[in-house]
Image (cartoon, rainbow, N blue to C red):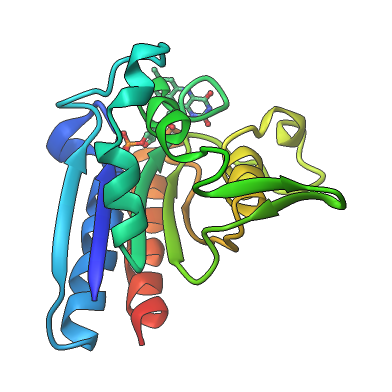
Length: 183
Ligand SMILES: Cc1cc2nc3c(=O)[nH]c(=O)nc-3n(C[C@H](O)[C@H](O)[C@H](O)COP(=O)(O)O)c2cc1C
């Protein structure tokens, strides 16, 4: 099994999404008795914004295609994903590689991969909540991954900016969830 592990938080060791994505990878590795892990820290070593020349570098796409499992640490910044993670998305959503256009509409080609996303958000975005209309992280990642043929699984740590107690509680619940996901 090859796991591609991505992080995008700018918060280093204080990052909730990093702690949760690491726990997911650890649990999967234990559960399966080992794994090849490819790690990409998109905050420490950002991919450049997309340019025509950047299409020539297929290293991120190759890593993605080679992995059977992808674990993504995804913090919410300004209601959506970090630009560093968007730059990675721009490298893997490629016509002819991860999707294609057909007469009956677009078709995802990346099906068969398991993708688990550790979402970390400062607020709460449940359906019906006042902020739900501003949720463009989970909805975007679901939409774009669906487009290439993947049904992602999410581990949620929400309300992280509400209070230290809420933050501890949310992270604890999310870390517990990672054990269930790997089983
Ligand atoms: C630059 C920045 C922008 C943020 N924007 C939002 C936001 O729009 N909505 C929200 O709920 N939380 C927001 N937050 C809070 C983060 O989502 C929260 O701190 C989360 O823990 C970040 O993940 P991390 O701990 O892995 O870095 C923001 C944090 C930062 C640093």
